[in-house]
Image (cartoon, rainbow, N blue to C red; front, side, top):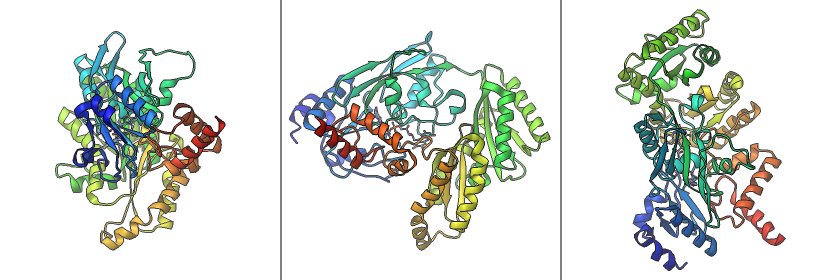
Length: 485
Ligand code: FAD
């Protein structure tokens, strides 16, 4: 492929040398790796448009990439070497904050942490928050419809986005940067691109919602006897604390044990262990002592009703951070412990206790001796339902046998999720990781509608092919589109 035209436009921002391209061609965990004909680093929407027009004219597939922190392999090209990797990190300007409208307009490559910081400077809150926030970009957050720890109160990335600027597969620029909370003028194109994982077009900028900065934040770490009690506590907390309830996270004692083992500073803040814990956060306009009193009142009622057995409240910022660290360090501790088979599932909140009981029993019967490492955003019905080998099975032979169980374990867990009316990807997207499994759980009608959208917006199947929808389906769809012409 002759890259002369692109090289002339992009000068030092088009790379073909293997060493320079290497970091873009594997995901951050090294789980997926691919090849590309070139890596382009546009620094304006016009640049993105130029690249996409060129790719369209030359029938070159495009893999958009933001911070490359995704967990489903969506930002890694395949091994053919035919695709162009489009890195958006140089589109990193904050275009403006509108304090009266409570909005911020940013380019796609601005990191989530930078957006939070800009909001804070304007005495506002941008509430999307997740552990990769220093590296992940707003474009990637929107393309994967990221969730995180405050969805219960503020919603996921989709709900925080009012408008988008997108470059289409043909290289045209759609300016949908509207800061409107109401706009009933036809199909919602913004919602099509949010969560589309780079398969419909490239997000180049967004208008995002801002909120007032809370006056206080209080966290509480609560011992609960069971997931059922945790769910009843969630209902009680919603009644007592109303909109000030910002986060409601569930974790098993196995999770906390892993954090204590792998993070030297970690301490259980309670005098006795419990099979399950909840970490809840309250934030709002009230001062800290009023918020703390409201949480203390909640505990009194919860203990009276046997929904909780003990609780520790944050009394300082250090304590607040230490309580949150117990939750946030679970993933890293699991990584340090060894191989895990992970599931990011969501369920109707009312079905979670049944799901946990029946799926735990089914796994124990089918695959004796496994450890369940279960935690998640209970307030959003989102569980990270992870499976590890037993502690005494760390030899290479045992790990090999465990890895061989990945397919059957995924099938058992995801079938159970589907039977309970849930989703097999709550917040990490499909990418290549869950692409084929997803087709199993969606109806033929849903799959047909999804393929129709893909073919309407990207008839040549150039936008991140093989992600979210399997390439075989897309190619055959493309062939039928061509024949019709
Ligand atoms: P990338 O990884 O670069 O890309 C992800 C997908 O989006 C790819 O399909 C890519 O093609 C597409 N894409 C990227 N930019 C664009 C663009 N501008 N236009 C079109 N498509 C684009 N996720 C959660 O939801 N909740 C969590 O709590 C959470 N915690 C995490 C914690 C850690 C430590 C890590 C590493 C990840 C976590 N994630 C979480 C995963 C999360 O999806 C990503 O961190 C983030 O949303 C992806 O942003 P990114 O810029 O890194 O995108």
